[in-house]
Length: 258
Image (cartoon, rainbow, N blue to C red; front, side):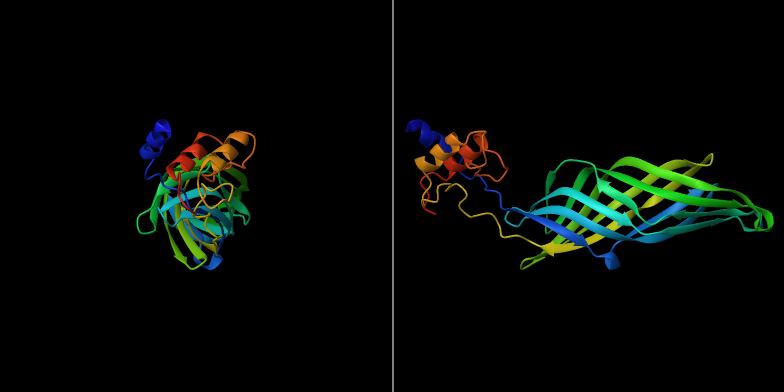
């Protein structure tokens, strides 16, 4: 009993996660890929639409947010790099290019709904058609280039919640140098995404009451031990597993009425 008292006292203040997982649908009218293409010291900037979804998480109690996944599809973007009478290059990022999360779930704290994820890996794939022309518009070369690269960048954003509805906004910078028919070509810009969805009900306020007895006690501890690393029946902290973390949740709430 002394050990139980000591453990319970030491775990006072343990914060029970109230993370609500959100699949948010991108609003194409508010989302876009804005990018500048630079080649042979000539730059042209253009934009394309964005569609897709974000898998996000919001803990309205602590302000913690997490990113689980995102899958974005980019509409067609046209660039025209003109050197006047000397010629130039027309390039098109064909519609259907994708940007997708290439990492594992990660969480950060937010302040007044604003957050920053320091390192976010993502894949960007697509196809660029190009045509170079010289004097009098004479075509001097054309072709197709496949883009496929993995970048890691910092992304910032914010979220708002109104009732069951949540809106998430994020900015994903892009800075990529690639070879196009023997020439260095630089794409710089960023993806702006605004997505919204319906939040599920928050986790139960008394997750330590695993046996639904109305009180946290030996019954809940026994349930954890019987499910130990076998099933999620003793999952008190919502991570999908039954282990020491769940014992911590139960001990921190020991004796509480639910």
